Length: 535
Image (cartoon, rainbow, N blue to C red; front, side, top):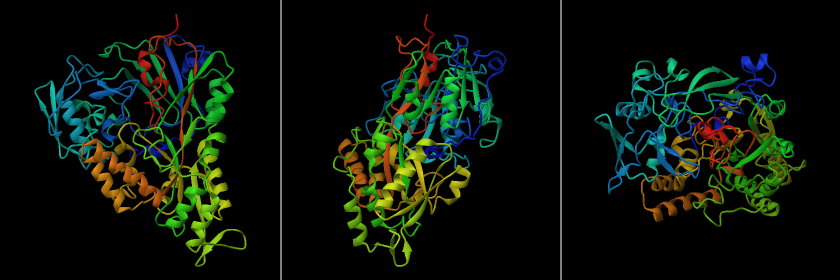
């Protein structure tokens, strides 16, 4: 889970009604939407980034459209060269990674890409003065240096098994970003990169517009104009898609189902690591009690949420690692058992009160649960969770709010949050559970504090021995059974409805295994630069 992944969760957006491009406004069914020119695409997404600078976290997981990393992930989530000419050479001790760089690459302003840009990017991210909440993801990195213009050598503090996966981080140009304030300079909203697209406009809360980079080292994209419409509300996004204002959109299952009989559109389902969870803050008399946490963990009916809320497009979640991941610890599944929840609470002294809500030492088993306004999936999960908890004698008051309202309350109030990152188990668990990161923005939102988990997380990231790593992450998942800290509810498949005017025969429209943070980087448009219109 990334540092800001929960905010939109992670990147919370301003609500807004989509303002179409000027061409679309003047010509119904024009440049924006299904009747538009063959070389344009407009997609509806739910969230927008806070910055477009890789130095502040944008593009750290790849597919940024504007930038490239040294490596990239293909459709099967396997690493492939991007700005690097080949996969890295790794020393026998696992402490040195050497990358040979692709020749002839230029930034969109015409300046050459060199090893200096790689060194600048990584050193700036690691600088404590840079406001990059994901800095701990590069904790293993000791130093990075250029060897001439065409090679870069990374030296690690310890053998960090997934380091190569971290080098999908987007590379920023030193000659632009290095000449201004890294946190507030114009590069944060007017970036220059080596990627397949160039940003042409960003109306906050409304849309991002791009044009194809004619000098892109991978070949000029066939889609010449690309727009990402920021539409926070699920219903509005579906309405805009149906009206032809959009060529594609991400939709929750219930709304995606409304397009099932539409012969002009196709639905694409992406498997994900995206989970919904309830934070159970340590600093609250009710949610901080281990017995309450354990009771809620078995009181919740996860399968019912999958069936009724997700309409089968997902699976029960028992932790950040999906049950179909090779890293999932078998035997940590928790079955729905209200009777067991009651026994746990009884044994801990939480006795039913006259209104059915349990009480202990004068404290009612009651707490608020916040969810993001306009997010139907979060709302439905929150209400279902509250209903299940009520049957066990725990009162949960679900209420909606913006992140500006929710964030100051996270230390004591529960939140219906989201997260998840494919790939290495370190990505899913370290930022979510490490006690030293409690209260660090959207890291460890529950202020979870478990020394056994802390040690296991460090063990898991400081060795490249597969058996030792498996033992470490098994320990983490089994500790979450003993003291949850969060109630994990579901892992959610992402559903995208797309106009059927693109050629899928040549590997154009596909989906990857996706993280929680989706929108710009994920969806069928993860490789929009490869799309071709149907003949």
